[in-house]
Length: 108
Image 1: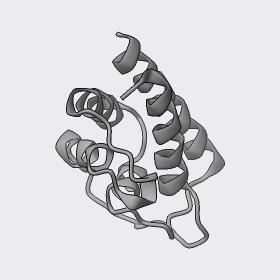
Image 2 (image 1 turned 90 degrees about the vertical axis):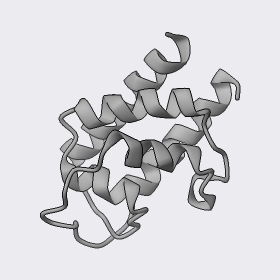
Image 3 (image 1 turned 60 degrees about the vertical axis):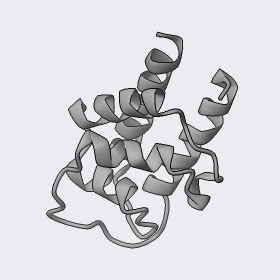
Image 4 (image 1 turned 180 degrees about the horizontal axis):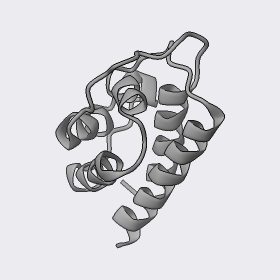
């Protein structure tokens, strides 16, 4: 997968995890890096059917797991929860974290 393609997939993942209209999944347990990576390697239809290579997915997932992004936001991403609605602050944190991780993991 080219570097350009990863930057097409990641915004879709962010939009999926952070869009929608309902309430959050309060009290969600923080997903593991493996669970997060599975979202990126599955080629889920919700992510445009494009899967990341395992090494890149794992690198991004580890960065997300170690970040200050809330457990609820990460759980919503893993569960492909279209009803999750984070705060603007959480959306910015998630987007900044995933963009930074993608840059680091793709360009090294």
